[in-house]
Structures are given as structure tokens and as C-alpha cells.
Image 1: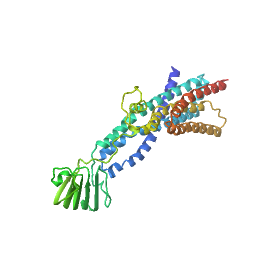
Image 2: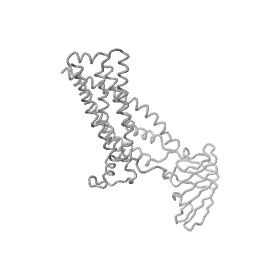
Image 3: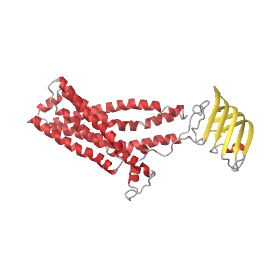
Image 4: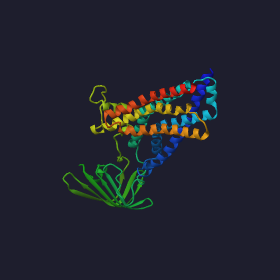
Length: 378
């Protein structure tokens, strides 16, 4: 019973520190990224609601990136605090073996590993895809914020806007070129024109409509002839304009099953259709390695941090250097894993080597810790 209470106490303290550090780091990173997302409102004209939902959907991607380093910091801080408060010394004096504490920390790392896999394989790709789908399906909220003065704006597909001056809500010298046939009915012709140019002296935007005064509509028909239609007043419905965005999902927004189908598309293992070109296979392999293999380095980092349990501390300065050295080594393992994953997709050998490193390195560290604990006991 006493041992179970000790294990629950250690587990609760480590997980509490882990969650605090994870949310703190993620909050800072999310705030910086949310500021960058303000372009959705300023430049792309999306609503505040769309901006908030889009920003929130990107939190899971930040969580996924900070889980390993948050666990490392939480584990090191917890072990150092347990040691300074003489809690570990009491346990060793009462006859509790260090192996059991080591195994407890290792079990916790497996739980963090499982959490990382759930986020990287399922949650993050799904939320990132939903964020892109949100931008793709949402309508812009303000055209006035998109169109810049004395600048050709092409934020919409096959549409170009130009405004020479803007005095409050009044637009002067408006130029619009429509190559998407959005305004094909303005000329009064039944046939489709490939190109429509609208020029007006003045205008204003209200309720997703552009009201123009004193202008001309020029259309180019299939024979290449230019037809002009002069008007004193007209209105353009801009609600159904298509924003110029990337509709195809990026690799990080694609489901893991779809990526696996790209790797095994020449076999019958997975029958799902692959939508990527052959020259992206390296990137697909790297993305899979980042999702499936990179989390496997978490137990190795945990075992390196557990060397704090076997450190002989003769003085305060020596203890400080030892703690920082162990933390630095564990941190460098995470950095090396992040760097090496970028080369894992270059060849099958690179992927296999990158996958085998944590599988071989973790048992080696465990046996080395076991050897050190036996020497300390003797």
C-alpha cells in the first residue's frame, strides 16, 4: 500500500509538471502564431469568427511539437526536486530499489509516447485538415480590407482589382478584370466571354456588393472582338467570388492512412488511391517518420534523465554541473532526432536506421542504468 501511494505521488507530480510546462510553452507559441494568422482578417478579409476557429484548430499541432521537450523538463525538474527535498533519500533508506522508480518513470514515458502517437497520427492531421477546409469554405467578410490602394489585388481566383484612390467609403477610378465569368451577365449577351473588364470613375462597397457609377464594361468574345457597354450606375454581387487559396491539403494535413497508401501504392496492402506525385515520396516518408518514429525517442530521453538517480553528488557545484550535463545530453537527443528525421525520407536505409536507433538505444541505456544501480548498492 505504501509503495502504491509513493508511485501515485511521483506519477501525479511528474504529470502535473508536464501539463503545466506543456500548456505554458504551447500558449506562448500559439500567441505568436495567432498574431501571424491576423493576415486572414487584414489581407484575406475573413471574419473574426473564422480567424478564431482557425487559430484554435492549430493548437494541436503546437501540442504535438512540445510534448517531448515538456516531458523532459518535467521529469528533470521533478527528480531534482525529489532529491533536494530528501524524498529519494528516504526511499533509498527504507529499502526501496531504484529499479522500481526507474521502471515507474519508464512506464510514464510510455504513456507520454502513446499520447504523442495519438496526437501525431490522428488528432493533429485531422484538425489541420479541418482548419484548411474552414478557410476554403468560408466566405470573406470585408472586401474593403482586401483591396489595396494603388495596387493590383488578385486575392480571388481569376479576378483582379485596382483602386487609385479611396476617400472613406468612396472608391475612385476603379478597375476590375474578370476572367472567371463571375460578371458575364452584365453585358446582356447570352454567350460566354473569356474576359471582362469593368472601369468606373466612382463606387462604394456595401453588403458584399460593389456599386459603380459612370463606367464602361468591356467584354472579349470567343472571336476576340471587344464589345463595350457604358453605364451610369450598376452593381456587382461579389458574395460568390472564389478566394485564391491552395485547395489540395499539405502533407501535414493529410491522414496517416493516406500517406501509408502512397508508400504502398504499388502493392495490394492498402487499396486507397494515392494523390501525390512520385517526386513527393521522400517527403511522405519523412512525414511518416515524424509521426510514427520520432515519438519513440521519448523513452530514451527518459532513461537519460534517470541517470540523475545514480549521480553521486559530493558538493553543490558538482551537483549543478551534473544535473545540467544530463539535461543537456537528453536535450541534444531530441535535437538530433528532429534533425535526423529530415533525412529519413532520402532512402529506405535512412528510414530503417532512423527507426532502429531508439529501439536499440533505449535497451542499452536501461542495461547501463541497471549496472550503475548495482554498483551503487554494492
